Length: 495
View 1: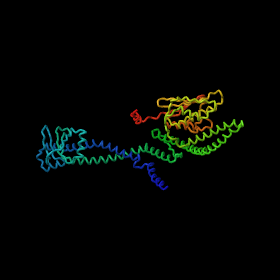
View 2 (view 1 turned 90 degrees about the vertical axis):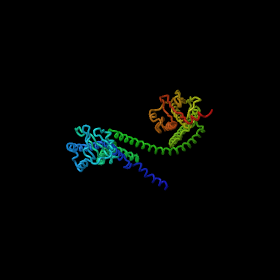
View 3 (view 1 turned 90 degrees about the horizontal axis):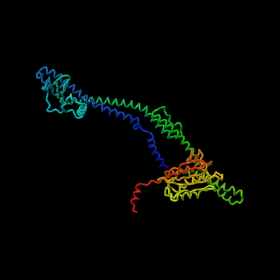
View 4 (view 1 turned 30 degrees about the vertical axis):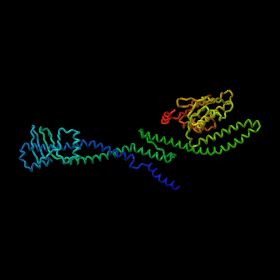
């Protein structure tokens, strides 16, 4: 007992966890994070041309300043500038040297200390988008200690200006710009994510959360009408889902109520039948002695009394058989159907005037469970006999015939009688227990049990025809599928 309680206590939190979703794993959190990530990815794609444009603009600005200084120096005498003045000019631009090319002649205007080598040459006029993005990423991640040669025309001047400078100032400016862009992008992502989250939560996540809570609440007490979801007046997919869920819960609640009533009724009927069967068995023993009485009146009524008692016993046994939880799975074998039909004929209590025809061929075989198929045919044939027994007119043909045919790997057993046919009410609930009886006072369990047994074989029981003077049932049973490995083994086995 204590171990069971401990097991329940351990299982309790797991069940609670499965029925409630933490905030960190909810759809709202996932949606918010995905929106932030997607917006950041979009900002990264936009950032690449931005940083390339910023790098090119920064270099153009420095080259433009160098061009302005060059124009002034070209008009005067470059050698007239002192070393201090030259350094001040270069420091203001952040360069090591300034040169100008005019008419194919290059002149070095200002220089502080000429570097031994130049790591990268940048032609401002010919830098494309892809090349600009590649160069920007290269400077951003690997620059800082390189020497650049930047050259190109400035404005409408026909001269080409040239600037030699280190790239650490450029890289520092690009890092600051990238930091600002990242900060702004993060703010945009958060703002966009919140807007998208609020909109989708209102339109979709909120109603889905409501449906989820409704399903969990309904599962706790499906018999409570107040737990059924109240659908909103929406014409989109969410509205359709809410209305379908509401209708499904209503149908399920109605079905569960009916099942509960049937279960309670079945339990009561089973208890009554158990005692009633014992009483009827005692009545049968007593009624058997009536046959020994020589009184003509007793001899006239004794067979009717015995038949009535037999039917009452069969009803009780049918109810108890249907009340079992589950039929065992069929144990299928190859059967000679004609012999099985003869056994069914021998068990039936066929009164005089009813003809039984076994039209099954001698060699016909069926793949089925013999006991279960015997029960199915017995139920069908007994129903037919009882239906024809109600006809008391002597000229009426009363015949029960059982035949069979094979269609490929499917066996089809046909049971035909010349009774009055099934009433419309019986056809509507033909295979439903307690509702599909064709006779007054019947339980309707025979066809329900037969349908369940044949369905376990993978087959069907169907009413083919039912008119006045002809009622036909067909039992279809497919052969068992042959496993490939077994078939291959049988082919390899020597003869």
